[in-house]
Amino acid sequence: MINLIKKGDYVKVDYILEVDGKVIDTSIEEVAKENKIYYPEREYEPIGFIVGNGELIEGFEEAVIGMEVGEEKTVTIPPEKGYGLRDERLIQEIPKEMFADADFEPQEGMLILASGIPAKIIKVTDDTVTLDFNHELAGKELKFTIKVRDVQPAESE
Image (cartoon, rainbow, N blue to C red; front, side, top):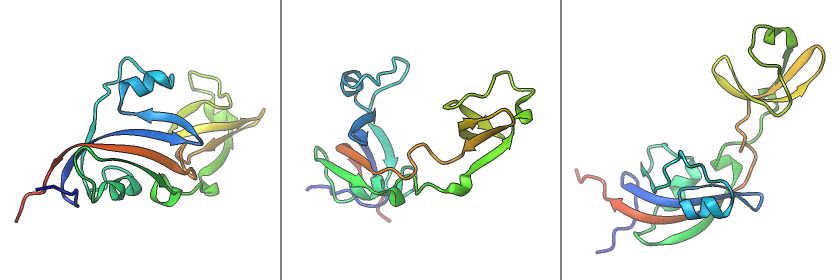
C-alpha cells in the first residue's frame, strides 16, 4: 500500500532552496558543494518534521501533503506562505550612540542581535543606524525541490 503523506505524519525529506535563481540552501552535501554554499561543520542529511505542526514554513508543509516516498517535486512558494511580506514598520532608525558600548563599529550589511532579535544594518550615518528586522527572505518567492526519503504515518486513534 502506498502511503501518501498527510497531516500528522512524520516525514524526512531532502530539499534544495532557490531564491532569485540561485541555490541558497540544501540538505544535500553535493549540491551545497556545487553551489559553493558548503559548510564543513553542518550535517547534510534529510530534515525530519511532523506535517502540519508548523515546524517549517506553511508552503513547504503544504507541498509535501499527498507525496510518497521516493517522489520528487519542485514547488514555488509565495512570500505569504514563506517568510511573509516585507514590513516597512520593521525598519527602524536608532541613535548611533546606542552602539557606544558595543564591541564593534556598526557597518552597512552587518547582521546583529538587537535586544535578542536578529537585524541587518542597512544604513549608517554620523548620528543614526537603520536596522531592518524583516527576515532576510521576507518578500521573496521560494523555489523548493523536495524529495521524500521516509514517511512514518501518524498514529491511528
